[in-house]
Amino acid sequence: MAPSSNQTGSAPLNPTDDAVPMLVHVTAPATLPAGYTFEAEINGNPDNIITCEVPEGGVTEGQMFLAPLPVTYDGARLRAPVGRWKDGLFGCFNYGICHASLCCSLWCTPIAMGQTITRMNLTWLGEPGTWNQAQRAFQVICVLVCCSTVYSISLSIGSWPYEIGERPTWLVVAKFLGACLVTFWSVYSLCRTRETVRARYQIPEENCTGCEDLCCSLWCSCCAAAQLLRHTGEYETYPGVCCSSTGHPEGTPKTV
Image (tube, rainbow, N blue to C red; front, side, top):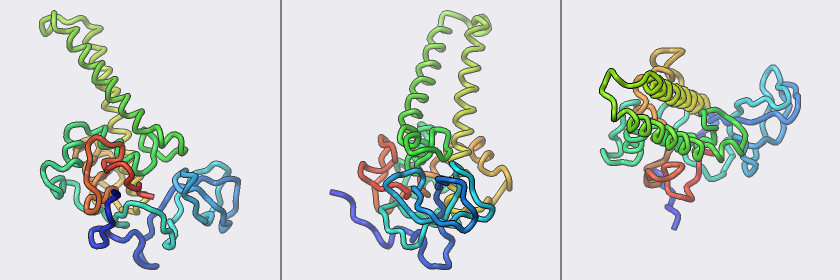
């Protein structure tokens, strides 16, 4: 049985005409002038269609841009505040010390990031992309995490016969390069995911203007991943799940 909606536990997405609207990514079907209206797929989803207006300056064919989600849109979606974060960066314990959003972010940050990416229909790099790329993103992230884990364990096992300082150069270099590549991807993807979430929910930077997303992703990745899960999720209505592509039970709607 699907969970029932909780009117008191969810902040309205666009409560009034004066509210800051949530933005969604749409792709221009052709080169169009400013003010032109057309039917567009929300975040590349062929099942979600809205009428949007071309922004100032016009767009070129295939260009992806942000458009406001109509207040009248009534499709199934997870709700979150627009214009501000639902809670702070260090509100990790807001749902309890054993909540799925905290455990997943603490034990496997890339998987927590992947859950946000799935909810937001992003690519494995945390960027807007095609619908097919978004549908494969979580699987790609899981494969990367598994491969990097196997790679690291294999090199560790290979170094057992050697004393520290006597390990072959190739072994040390291989381990270092592997760690650098995984770290770079993790930080970049988390930074881009946070940047995209802020753009769609129109959340301004509060600290380290110009590099807040990078600083949070680099210095406090688990807290940043947990905050993204709390903001894009609706834990007041749906339970948190660690072993899920969205961090919610199967059948739970996405952000849009």
